[in-house]
Image (cartoon, rainbow, N blue to C red; front, side, top):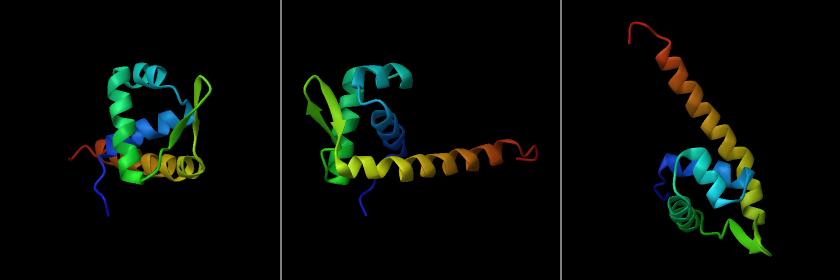
Length: 91
């Protein structure tokens, strides 16, 4: 298994919802170049282009389309785990 930074999954989720590195950067508080660098790391990790140029826009590959559901579910589960830990006053 390749190691992957979980923060990259947040970037991937946003890129799959809106394949625009500038707007995703603004949403996540990152620069466009940081989002592009994250996309390159994601491409390496998944061994897929994930997003390809389609005219002036970017379009997800078939593999990327299949990733959105699982990535969204994984991140939701992680967010729930963190929330459960936060609401316990003794911790």
